[in-house]
Image (cartoon, rainbow, N blue to C red; front, side):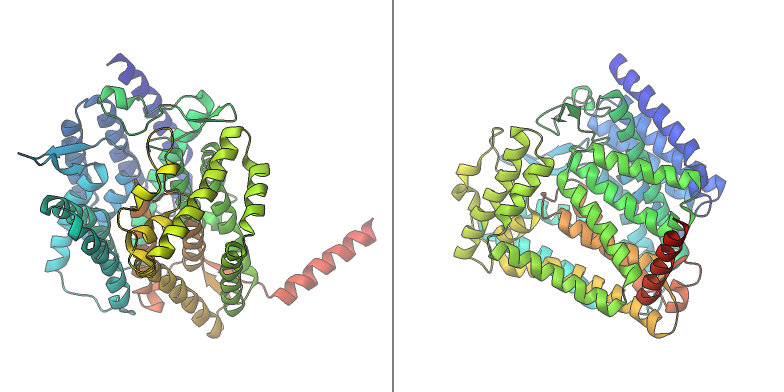
Length: 530
């Protein structure tokens, strides 16, 4: 108990400092009362994490805090979504396996995201069902079909090899993890104000997680992994992960790469909500916190994804929408061509030179290459609907922990559901990118010189996240965050053009010709001065 109190004091202090430092960054999103309330709910969750000691007690307390917060926030379903997003990224992965009976080992694994989805999003879904539908500028039908279709295909493919209990559990988990968040968020965020309010709460939760990451870097000690001893459970095989003699920070997540994925979201939301005020010290400090935590996770894939996000944002500021679309297609085709031409060996050698600081790091990069080649060979045997019992054919890739770490989400999807499953999974993201680009082009054709910051942020973030899961398994909170990419974008696209642009800060796009002339003029001035 003394150990738990020590950790609590440190984390609670970090949260209080972060609340004070970032208060001016959020002043255009929240009123002082709303900002204080958000941090109060978050810190109540921190206290519960360290003092409850039993998973069942912790989850019950989380549910009570969530219900209290939803009542305090108000705003109907949108308020419940905001509290859900705030807490879901700020609570540790303490889970409870609900026991079965007879030969059934367990019925359901319940963790904070699922408890919050059950309590808050279930409540919001009931409210939405009783509310009058609001006309939308865009229909959700085809996106909905693909989102549901992929989950239905997954369940159908495991049906011949699974028991009724396993299928029922998979259905409940899929509903709580993916379907319920997607449908509630897309239908409840009906105005730009609601969307900013919900995304602002998510940004507060990410700011807290990033602040804890910075504290772990400074202290060289993980502040949440000790909860495994307190709750007598394990969510990672190694308590402390190191790279290059430095601890890999992971904050309230079970693995550094999940924290790194969250930081990508923090950077993307920061660009949309706060970049217009980047000269404000608190806003710059928040971006620095996200960036430093991302670096301190020592997760190579998210590092490259962050660079890709920056490149995409820069390109969208300098290119027309049509040129950027072509640029994006050419980049994807070039990446596929590199693999088909076996040029990935040179790429892997370059990555080893850049990021391989030890034999372990280099072997990790090489493991990914071997996994990719082995998986593709298996997929060729059954390309359309996946490979049944593929793990039995990949025993040579078992790691020291006795597991086959599928460190590529696309491989996992194709092995489970084949090319058809991968198409169903990717189509919603591709359609959202297409429609966001079309929204930008409509503004361009209307003579509006400024581009939507939201559309640019979501396009770049989607591109970056889709690249990041090429280098990592999608687990923990990552599937929910990927669902949020779709849900936020669909909610925004469902608004009328007037509503989208009513109070959004936009980005002025400079003509490439004007950019070249301006740079040439500056160079000529510099030459004359010298």
